[in-house]
Length: 196
Image (tube, rainbow, N blue to C red):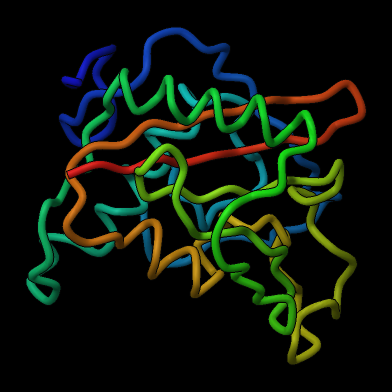
């Protein structure tokens, strides 16, 4: 499938539609940040609530690491692909309905992040993770591993070394799609499907 959709971050293509809605509660604190762009996945909350909101933040996060004079991995942009987005949405629908995610769990809970799974779906490289209703909230002060303000524990936080290295900095993939199901009780089921 080819890329499509509205313009995304950094000249990359992104998904059409979406509400641009966000969720998460800072509880009056700053628990996100870092050296990157203000709309990257380190600056949480707020968190995106649909693929149209997630993709530009993914692209901004990837741009934090590529074409900075140090990293030589390519491509700089992983372009939106409508066909992969359809596969990702199918995966998200099934995941939200009770399908166990495929692959190996990536658990960085020792540093305060929720797990996600890295595997395959319909023959494509795919990741899946779920947010709880409080995943994108700033935790109470002193919740970090060194008693500092801890990060929002959502699995796609750029502070999560697994997600940063294996998803944001994925190498050898030039196309992607994102699937999402939000539930009435505040959970968010996310899937990411990549292709060459």
